[in-house]
Amino acid sequence: MDSEQQMNSVSGERLNKNSDHPYSVTSMTLADGRELIYFDDDPEVLNGSVKRTLTDSRELPRAKTDSEIRRDPLSGEWVAYASHRMNRTFMPPANEDPLAPTIPDHLPTEIPSPDYDVVVFENRFPSFSMHMSRTPSTEGNDGGVEQLSADDDALLDNGMVPHRPAVARCEVICFTPDISGSFKDLPVSRIRTVIEAWAHRTKALSAIPEVRHVYPFENRGEEIGVTLQHPHGQIYSYPEIPPRIRNIVHSSKEYREENGSDLFDDLLSAELEEGTRIIDRTDHFVVFVPAAAKWPLEVMVMPLRSVPDFDALSQEERADLAPLLKKLYTAVDKFFDGVERTPYIASWNQAPTVPEDRDYVRLHLQLFSLMRSPHRLKYLAGSESGMGFWINDTTPERIAQRFREIWDDK
Image (cartoon, rainbow, N blue to C red; front, side):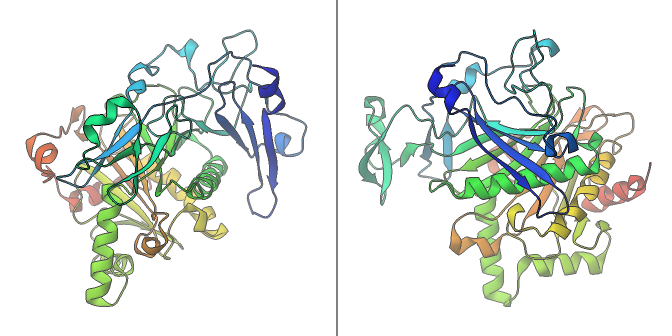
């Protein structure tokens, strides 16, 4: 690390005392210019007796990417191209775990400190990045969408395929230093810190002018396609609103115009009244299986109050959510008999950053698994992959019944 990087390695430290859950936020710059942020609830860190390592001893080239996005003129959907990800780290042995703490006399990892509570850092192999190696031209395409000026983009400059650099940010969130751990194993207090980190990053990423949506999620299990054994989540910020969120905005607007009420309010009221797909209800959240669930295991967690994203959650809602998530993730690992670690995707849907659309999407978790029975996966074949028309081998009511059977198991 050069002297300039050493001098600029620490960019801020903040102790959040205005919460029922005190935690500190400390940011630094890694050797290649990426940001890393520690979120700590450890009392010894909060009182200053333990300090996190704030220098990166590695020698790394400056982070630069060439990602771009293109819009399909037939479907209108945007596709990201990030060829540098072909060389990303793939299932390294435990002694080369890049998400482990850096232990003295061992190879340094992405996290310089010998221990951590929760850490967020910019992905070394991002789909979207603020570290672009090419600069967009000032000429517009398709009503002002910026073009890449590189020669290899000439074939796209006929106006049929809008395209531009994939300027946004992709982050990794590590919630345990233990490579064998999992989200369900976290104490409730640590889950609360993860929620605070999601809220912090949602607010920060939403402030980036190029960002249209912020998406926290976790892929778990080799069956899902994870490339690292160490449990972790990710936080994507997108330069365009993803199709799922765009569809929700459309449905919500249409419903409000036709009925004069909020789609999410009416959906929860109907589910609570009908009852067969309800798994649990707390003071602030409802856990239920969607009536049109696509996956053989699918569940939603939704706040009763209209909340666009994590940053808008009250302290009471955050405190209520933490133990509920622990209960849910514990139940997911009991869903299939004989399966100890259910593969899943935990997908947090938030409102877009675009002001005119924010009132039409409510924060909610959609957690689902590709597993359709013990050790058998649901593959997306012709109907799902080709046409987007889903066929489920079970029913939402059966999924909910199974969750209720195991919900209070110890």
